[in-house]
Amino acid sequence: MGFKIQPSPRVIVEGVTDHTELTNIGTNTHAEIDTHIESDGTDHTFIDQSVKSDASPTFEGVEFTPITAPAHSEGVLFYDQDESVLSYHTDVSGTTIQIGQESVVKATNNTGSQLDNGTPIYINGASLNYPTIAKASASNISGLQTIGIVTHDIANGAMGYATTRGLVRGLDTSSWAVGTPLFVDTTAGTLTGLPAPIAPAFLCFVGIVMSQHVTLGTIYVDIRCIPNLGTANDVAITSPLDGQVLRYETSSSTWKNASAAWIENVVEDTTPQLGGDLDPNGNNIVAASPDDLQVDCGTEKTIELVQTVWDDLRIVPGAFSFSGISDPVLIDWQPGGSGATLKVYAFKKNDQVFASCQMPHTYKEGTDLEFHIHWTPHARGNEEASTLVGWKIDYTAANVNGTFGATTTLDLSATTTGTDDKHEIIGAASVDGTGLKVSHMIMVRIYREDTGADDTWSGTTNAQSPVLLEMDIHHEVDTMGSRQEYIK
Image (spheres, rainbow, N blue to C red):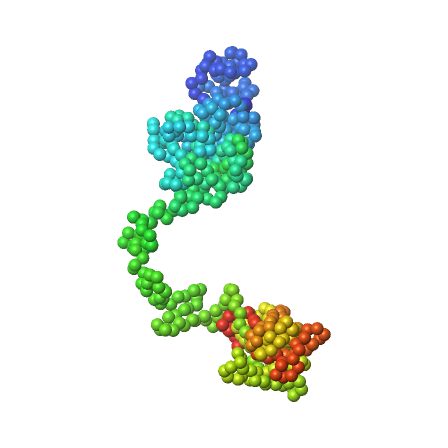
């Protein structure tokens, strides 16, 4: 170990009058030492100031020679070249304090057993002007009173050190990866990683894992205990009961636990009633009367669904247009063979109808459309079991001010299930909705056609032909309407 003294700031050396009061002077002779003591400093080679007992030499600093930590000796001060820090040895063998990089507390272990290196502790008393310490636990208030981590084994009844900030070494950190946050555990004197203890446990963060090893692990200690609600300085909870709430008391400037019965317009086990306006983010839901609910979304605002729902855009037979060529005809249909006789459109092969529809303003723009056909074999279900009906749809669509393109054909050929008067549904034929807006128009031609093997229905007369009940388009809905007349 070595250091040198440089002039200024001031250090006063008093009481030295003779070489017999000096030791470890090196190669200087006694006479030289005496001369140096009495000199005014002009004959010194090591210092240019007087060191007489009545002199006051000044120094500008002490420069330590960086060295590897020496063998432990209480009171030794040195610059640790491995840790790049000024350090000193304490009265506990093997315990070194790194000045400026860690803070410690000296305390007595009065727990009745040894406190091991790495144990989280709290102050539980005092002895001979020093605190006494015990194991902290997240299961009681001691977890919130954690002050540090024991930095070496402390025998029962002995004094030792706990680190309140800085590195603690020589630990078993094999269970935790580097960077893992550590907390006081519910088992007294132990640490845990994530997940951290949850209520009703007391949460106290103690540090971060710096290195992972079964015996040489290191953690950086930085105690941060997080108060729970009951320990906040403006909360006074006494004899808490299930269902109670916190209520502010202005006279004491304190939050106190109280029965929830004072909350107006809320009846247990029934639908809560609004006592006034509910104003989420500047919009209003107003209870206008006991029977009505008004929703004020604001100008050009609306209720928007996060998860969309589905609706039908329907084209019923009453909306069909006929070309005069290959028109389907109305036939009699008596479902179940009794009761009223209904009129429905039967489609022979190559029969066709035409229709148009406009997409409503509830449509979620840009989403796909699903075309369906609802039909029935009426009284021919048993005779036509497993035959195919070649339903087809030609369609084209255009937005407002858009241009209609060439039609696209959807094949909705269906297999007859073999049951008379059954409501059959075919679909869905999906249509890409990219670019489609509200109010777009869809033009359709609905017809029955055999393209080779997709219509094997055997009946040929009107009375023997399948019946079209309705054509519809399933579409996604995300609002009650559009924000503007023509703009979603």
